[in-house]
Length: 318
Image (cartoon, rainbow, N blue to C red; front, top):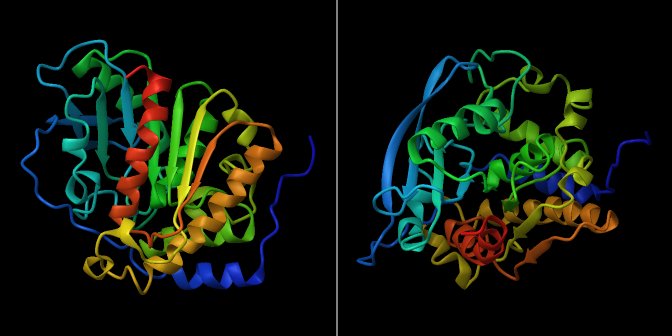
């Protein structure tokens, strides 16, 4: 086996990353609307590996019809426990109204990178989120909603890279995967810095996750290194430029859209470009949307959800 793939990065990008990842993610509140909305159910899913119960929102057509495909949508850095989420900050219920699909939105995993940690952490506790997402959660959703085997996985901001990672860990499990405004890659300088900064922001010790940066587990969980395992999966990648614009809505209403979100999105663009280049070098088809505006806001994220939906729907038969 050859040496691990390590994309080249400019020193300036690393400096930008360090500045960006000390700033909280920007948030855009969704405007209330009278349009029809998908039904929403709240279920509790027990995780034996974490010895805890995870609350999960599921959007679904009225009556819970059986045999529908599923889209699992991982939360951002706060794990949706902080009230910042697809459900709270976008009109996602209205978007999925009338669509023949179940949309699963777990609440939890703040600053965990949605992965299985090597050891419990004094601050972040025991994290076995890959096991939860790939084993416990699908089993519970199937019991409750009698879903089909067709599924897709998406991640946003913190969870964008982990969504790609999880898809490489279980090749063929997901027919489509989407990564919105995140930092794929864990072993190149920018990816390692971004991963460490996210965990540290939550008070966690990165050593408890995969060991010191550069350890074998870091390479095992690097979707750029393991991109070949995504062959045959429909892949959507997106990031904005870091320049505020109409796609953001009003960035002045975010918690730092013009101060931190612009830098964060520029970092996401650099990371996502690395992922796209790697897929291209391997001859793996994918869609990469590089937007001319966007400063890490829910306006941007929601635009990319809408834009990616036709690809996801085709892949899962929704």
